[in-house]
Image (tube, rainbow, N blue to C red; front, side):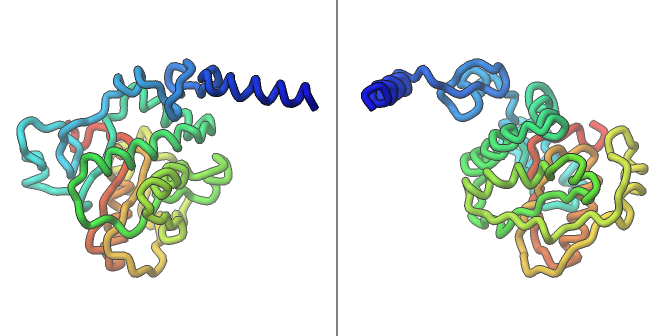
Length: 242
């Protein structure tokens, strides 16, 4: 018993001395922070001031870019962290293809934190709807990365996640590498929506590329009675052929 007591006391002192620390998901060095060290956090290429419809960086006090003023997308707001580039690109890849779900905890928490700090919106969304995977792809991957991203957002903001509203009913080739017209054809009749009563929803994706997938789902949601659909994603690639 005395040895056990001494061991427990040593472990407690070591923990108080901050010798036991987590590892940063980016540089893999010890850190006292939650999954990312302060140095890596400061170097993240997060977007500061951008068009709230397409994510284009803006100067001055404008909130919408000229392109979106003339031809706005079908969604009502785009909430993102950054462009699809290093190092967030690597985190997303590790989540989707290496099953490193801790990346989803970090990225989802960052998305929720940025929303709380930067969005002056008194009307909080009612629900999070993750972009669905076809059951075959989800079975092969083992999870839906968008559902994993939703977990820390729900914990932080208290907005529930419903993965039963949107369903992908047709198995399609991956969108990556397809042209915009091919993406549209690829998603024809690919989704189905269940009855619901939500008016203001978050459509959560990992990356918005051409916007084809989210546009298809936003159309379904608005046709089903949604009055406002906010698209949330970790990153966006260049939209509108920038």
